[in-house]
Image 1: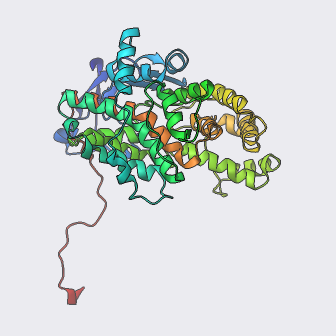
Image 2 (image 1 turned 90 degrees about the vertical axis):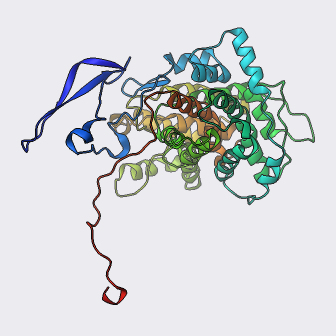
Image 3 (image 1 turned 60 degrees about the horizontal axis):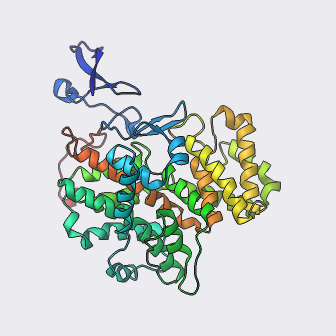
Length: 436
C-alpha cells in the first residue's frame, strides 16, 4: 500500500471535531480510505451491508474493472490466459505469482499429478450419504473430511503445510467431484490416470467405466480446461471472502476450503449456472422457442417474480470477458457433439440473441454472463445439472487457496470480526414467570 497525496477529512454536523483519515493507493483501481482508527477516535463504526464500498483486505492476485469488463490474474488478461495457457499454468500463476517456464510447468504438473489419488477410506465415507444427495452436499463433507486423512498438512501457520495442502486440494478435487458423481449414479469409481492431462483425467474419471476403453475428446478436454481457467479466481467474492474469514481463525486449510464450497453452493453465487439451465428447461417444457416472447414479457414485468438467470453480473457493468470466451467454446462443443439442433441449445441461442438486441436488456447491461454459457457447455459434455456447481468449486479451489495463503502471509491480517448496527431491545430485566 502506498499513501496517497491527499487525506480524507470526516466532519460532523453536530459540532464534533473533524478527523483526518489516511488515503491509500493501489497499483490500479480506486483509492481506499483507511478507517481502522475510526472507532477509537469517534466511537462510531461504518455501515456497509454487502460490503459494497469496503475493502476488507489488500491483495495482489486478481483485479476486476467491472465498467471496462476487464479481469486480470496477477496482471494478465483472462483472454490471454484462456487462449495461451492451460489450467495448471494458471494455477502456478495464482499460487506463486508468475507463469512457469517449461521446466517449472513440467515439475508443477508432475507434482499435482502425483497427488490425484485419495485415501481409499473416502469410499466408505461416501457410502454414508444417500444416493440422491446433491453433489455439493457430498463435496462439502468430503473436502472437510480431508483434514481427517492428511494430518501432516493442517497447520495453516506453517508455509510448508500450506503448500502441501494447496497441491493436495488442487490435485484431489477432480477425484472427489468424480467420486460424488459416480456414487449418485451407482457406477464404480474410476481411479486417476497419470498419463492424462488435468482436464482429460477428470473426463476419464467422470465418464469411463471398467467395461470398455474411454477416449478423451480433445475438444471437450480443451473446453473443460477453459472452464477451469475462467473460474479459477474472481477477487473478493462471497466464497473467497468466506475462505478468508474462516481461515483468519487459524483453522486448517481443508476446513477453510470446505467453507468456501458451502458458500459457493448458493444460487446467487456458484449455483447460478445450475439456475440458468433449470430456467432453460422450464421454458422448453412450456413451449420452447415459440413461447420465448411470453417469457421475456414476464421477465420485464416486475410483479411476475420471473428472473432471467445467467444474465447480468454484480460486478461487470459491461460484457463479462469470460462470457465471450465461453461463447466460443460453447459453439465448438455443440459442433463436436452434434447438438446444434438440440431444442434446449436452440432455445439458449434464441434467448441470447434477444438479450443482446432488446433495448430493455441492453440498456440495463444484462449481457449473458459466464454462467449462462458454461452451463450449456457442461450439459453438452454430459455433466448433469446438479454437478455444475461442484465443477465450479473444483476450478475455484486454486483461487481460494491463493487468497488464503496471501492473507496468512500478510503481517496486517487479523481474525475477521465485522461490527454491527444494533437495533434490538435495550437492556431489560427478566421477570418471574408468573409476571410475564
